Every structure is written in C-alpha cells, then in structure tokens.
Length: 295
Picture (tube, rainbow, N blue to C red):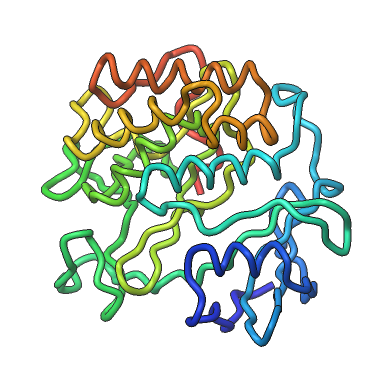
C-alpha cells in the first residue's frame, strides 16, 4: 500500500506513546506489500489519542533456520529496549502485544522526510538533517574510486553492462550511532530501506527481527567506519550498556522475556568487545557483510 499521510499524535511522547501502543485499540487498515513476513498498517487509539503504527503478528512470521528460538517480534522489541538505554532513541517505540491476529510487534509509524537531490543546498543542523527543505541523501552510488568529502566508502557494486560503482553512505553522526547500535544487537539486515530520516532531523532504524543471534551475523550498509575508533559519545554509551547488562538489572530481566540466555550472554560479549577495542567492528569474513538486496 502507498505511504499514508496520517501522522502520530503530537500530545504524547515517551511512556505515553508506549502505553498507547500497548493498551490502545488496534485497527488494521491494510497490509504493507513486499515484506517477507506479514506487516500490517494500523491505527491505535485510547482515551482520545490516536497514532499510526505497524503491527507484525507472530503468526505471519516465516521460520528461519538460524533463528530457531523465540520470535522476530520479540527481537524487534529487544532492539527498542537496547536503543532506549543508549539514549539515542534510534528505534521507534515498539511493544509486544495481542492484536487481531494474535501476539505481535506493534511499532509507532514514522513518516519519513523527503530527501533532497544530490547537489541541493544543505543547511542541516549538527545532527545532519534539517526537516525543512528535505533530508540530504544517506546512500549513493558514485563512479569515483574514492568516496569524496562527506561520504564513507562501503563496497564496489555491479551496476550493469560490466560497470561497477562505489557504494557510499553519508558521514553522518546519526548513521554512526546506528552503526554502533547494530554492532551491539548484531543486526543481520541493515538495508537502506530500513533508514528513516524523520522531520526535524531525527533518524530512525526499523526492521530488527534478525538481531541478537549468538553467532556473528552483522550485515549492514554502514561499514564506512569499520576499524575506526569509537566516538567519545559512543564509548560512554557502550560503558553504560555494559553496566546495564549486569545480571539482575531491569534491562536483563526484560531481555530475558524476549531473547534466550545464550543470546543475552553473546550480547554481553559484543559489548565487552567494543569496550576492549574502542573501535567499530570490521567484517569477519565468515558471513556476507552486505545484506541482499541492499535496499
């Protein structure tokens, strides 16, 4: 279905939105086509407040051989819980709840801001976006061997007729935070279509069903900082995550409802690894590092 025009309630933030998503009446308006699992566009309403949301019922999930335990819906909620601890707010409010087709993930709908064409003037703020004239592009294919100022190289890509181009992403602070989050949650599917710049300069990442695997599954288009030192901000966030993942904390208690103990221990290991190296991870070479299709 085409992208709807409905915008979320402006009077609710934070806990209020989570409560609305959890307890509101869920009404299915249509199905979002093209996804490998069932994705339903809905509204959720409660006490005069209403917002648009996405509902992914567990009953509509396709089984995956490398994720035999738990559900994709629960992993999406776990990704939101980790995002909230970072303080970056990179994942839209996401809850696990019952719905018209059984238990599933319910996530606030984000209306993506339009993107400017290459070469348009950029008066963006310090976070990399402005929400006024449109967002600068986050991904591009260039014919040069080097990415150019303001871009980071990812990989060379076939573009047809024996030609290749360089896939690049913006050297953007918001993307860099998302790259750290993906390394923590072991995101196996960070595609371009999962990046949602929102009005006002916010950037969200969506579709976190294939995360938290105990094995290294990191596949992403955000490899531009691979091997580089983490920012001071990211170091602080990783340290905080390490403390919050101590056995018995509220975060660990919550995660135990969503993913397995083995996966929680692997999560601790990834965070400890980032703390020890102080650097963005590099592709392991044991797993395809770029998702396919990349969009």
